[in-house]
Length: 350
Picture 1: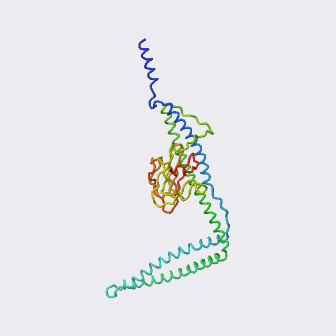
Picture 2: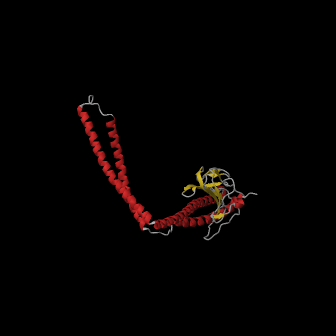
Picture 3: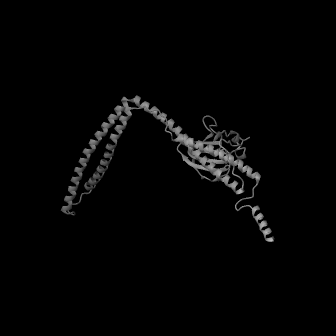
């Protein structure tokens, strides 16, 4: 009977003890983590949808009105004809240079007949004659190629002079293509940023779920269509640090999704403490740095010359992220749940 009682007490003690690796649960902290987890899942779903749409948009070819030009085709054909002629001329000129160099050495200091054997003198003379014959042959071939190149150049001038209107139409098409390329670059930039933010949100969801499991709390189910709680300030802060000194040249509005300065080569500062989510080059903006400020807030710095931070690095407010490009735009965007937010109320300090 006493043994049975001891076994019962031991079983109760084991049942009351927390499992290995499970921390004592704080219901208040668990509720906060569950709320953060719901918000993170909603944010992740939205970012994944927007990132997928951005990838499709970035991959779509630019719609540019084509301007067919027969004269452009003729010019391309002339260029194709001219290329091998120029290549052959280059090779002939190189061979002529080597032959002329050899002839100059023979004529500058001919071998003295009293010292050099007759056989070597005859061979040197024969070599000089052969080199002169080869030089004359190369000159004749080069003259023929020059004539062909001159004829192609005359044809090109005739096309350019007679078809100025077609070239003007091609120029207009080129301008439209440049505008389309700029828009395509903006779409690709957005796709890169969204993909980086989606990776960060996915990591945040996994980390929050792991913390809840370690506490012994339930990982909540987030139904489709759920909305996230929106904070009024990024991570509870009421101000940010401007990345560069001085007022911006462009403010938040139709022209820009943030504030834009002109770089001077000065260091670019982090607007708030956070984690570096992405650092990478961009064809139109130089280097991009994406910071996760917490609770769905992100800061995007576009237009750095070079970055001095790396992905997954923690930074403090005011820490140098890299250098600005002298004379080039530097833009800071503030986003909440991927929605651009005017940073004026956080940057215009009272």
